[in-house]
Length: 322
Image (cartoon, rainbow, N blue to C red; front, side, top):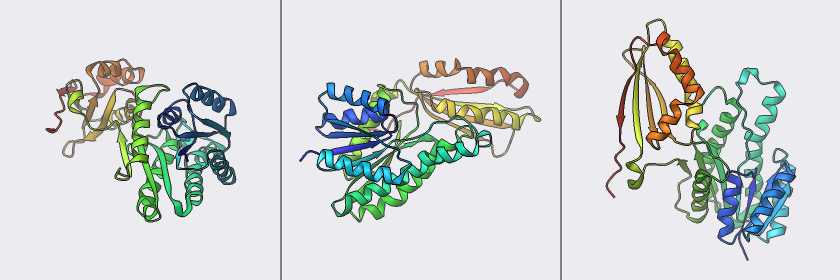
């Protein structure tokens, strides 16, 4: 009997890449999302690759709908092996400008739908066990006020997966998380990389409950990657304004494809000093960062905010000996 995966919140990015990755291994694929036309288009593309795929339009925020979808998926494929939760509402908006209805509707997908899917999967797997995969996000590790509902959802799911990893394992079910801390475009290398991570988590019982992507630098990549330490000293009356401006850079910068790490620090002894610790895929990616409009906006404010020129040092990460 062939194995199967159901992808809840299937889209043209990570969802399709995961479908293709599992499909290449001979698995049947069942796609769930609210948009029937989008599902049909993805299924048609998968079928051209020889992948057995099905579309099930459903609203994952309704627990009865997700239970029915999993039951139908098992009927279509004969056996449900993996359930992948990939749904999210990406809203760039702070918490206080959102309407009451927007808060409720976003959390219905970003939090409740994930919980409904996990509960339904465990119920469907029963004593036979199975694997639950979850697409996490870098906002769970580096929150940003302008992505309040998405960050809350990713943090909540990360909390649930970590908390359930051990108790579900004792019942024969694995639950695993891929924390994606970069922007992922449809058909991109990043989408394929995340799909490979999720495939490994389904295939290898020894995989940890969480993998953060992008991961540690390899020997082959070390020569291209660049670490930058930026030391910024604010005028005495501009320290908080500088910090606020730099905080606003963190989330959009982490969303850049070439950004590996971007962390803001403050000097313990001198609160006027802020430090950015950055790792980039290449010098070209750093140059592209400086060309972004949000970066230019902050750089243009440096004359009013800084007491002296920014101090930058550049480093090459050295991987451990193999």
